[in-house]
Length: 81
Image (cartoon, rainbow, N blue to C red; front, side, top):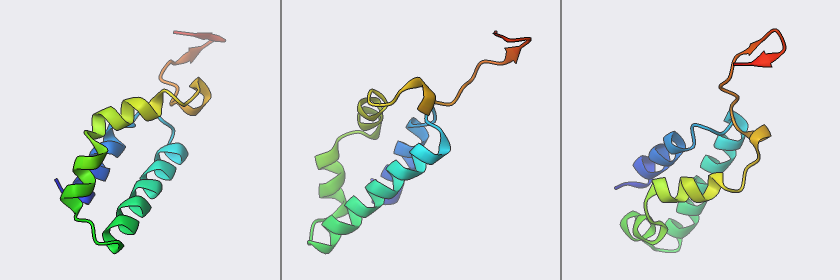
């Protein structure tokens, strides 16, 4: 898996986060890959060291509050349905 595919997959797994939070995480991972690639590591080695994007997403989502998540309920006359 390439860095781009890894990051795209991670971003999809983070669909529950609002756009701002999701974009911040994507930028952090892009920087992480760039930094390690400059140090001479391969994309494959970096991906293997991180583990599955779905696992990383689950762990990251644990750190976020409901306010940082996308609201999926529809408000109808003051009540969520």
